[in-house]
Image 1 (cartoon, rainbow, N blue to C red):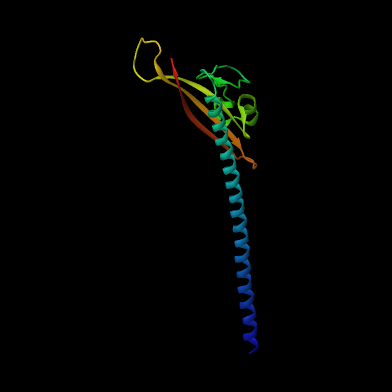
Image 2 (cartoon, rainbow, N blue to C red):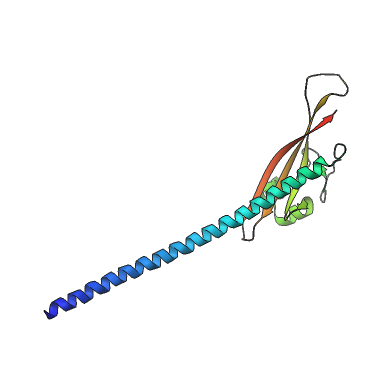
Length: 165
């Protein structure tokens, strides 16, 4: 009988160790889920901010009486002509840092945006006619960052505004 009591003790300790390992694994899994959820909340907040910046750009653009003027170079807070957007490192606006967006973009609702004039698109092929009807196209690029390092959202939209050429 004495030998059986020792075997039950070893079996109970083994089961207790396995149960402790399961509890620790579930705690670790909960921590990972919490980190994932925090990252998702941060990304959603940055997405909302970038969408607000796009809306601000559209609202501001609609309020102009005539076609917006364009400008070139650093510090331009108006509409850039096609191909003259001062791109950041590597000639790619997607990899630009915060200082580029602060220096070249318009601040809006916690994010920044830049507007590029893409050109006039006529409604018909009335070649040689004055006063053709059509749309001016604008590309708006909005960027927002989150509270966590590395969280950034970049949105791009093309808006059309009707004018007579």
